[in-house]
Length: 129
Image (tube, rainbow, N blue to C red; front, side, top):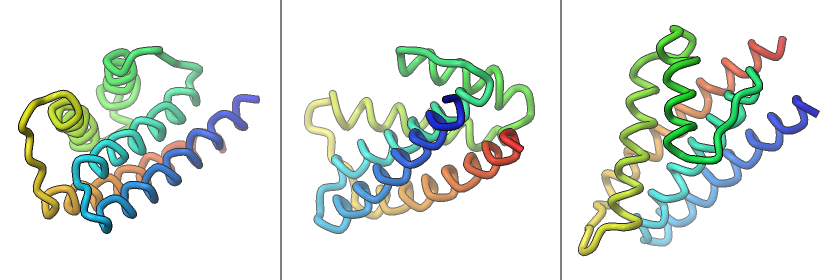
């Protein structure tokens, strides 16, 4: 069951990343940013589950990720910072008024999210043995 849930969340991360790619291509950078963050979020949920960790809140997921993986040296610090930044950008974009998101910036974030998910995938696979 544990492996099944981890694989499901990893698949959901990839699917959501594909959604972000399409939204970016279609000229909706704010929606693409939302999907970029959620792709990373689903990947982090998969990683947390390798240690039977979970939280029902985004702040809890970030805290567990940082405590058990970033501070423990399993995940590079820059990936922890990237995840936190994407959370902040997504919050501003989704809930702020008159927020303009530049498509070029979102394209850059998309590439960073691809690298993030690939690296977390590798860590997950190593932990599953």
